[in-house]
Image (cartoon, rainbow, N blue to C red; front, side, top):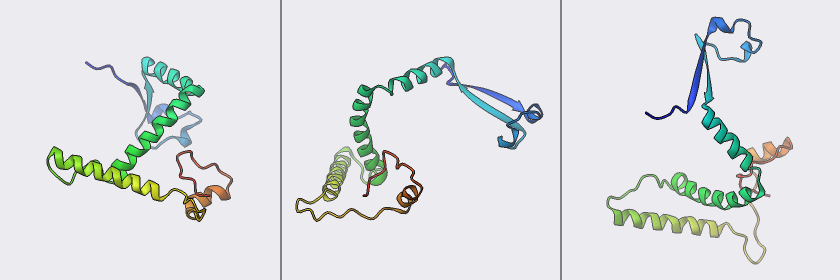
Length: 143
């Protein structure tokens, strides 16, 4: 039998009567809290500490680029489902989609003559800029 990944604690609504955080809690007949098991908690703590290391961040930069490409293929170009049956036709579709992604990326690069003008900021970027909020690292920068 597999080891559980979380411990669930349930409280009846009557037990929450004197809780100072009750107003922030969800309404309903009971409340549930989920805690990771000790082994999983220790693993998460170790991983979070490792992520503060500069060497880990350098290695992850390379991985995040690859993950972004795979995500673009699966979600941006519907790569989870194939239009064709058979391994050969599926392979051709994947190769052609990869070529399309590369052509798209090359077309977004700055031209050598300096005529590049980035697209205007999106509404979300304008919202963040107006409130002096940082843009997430994954956000495509439009200056």
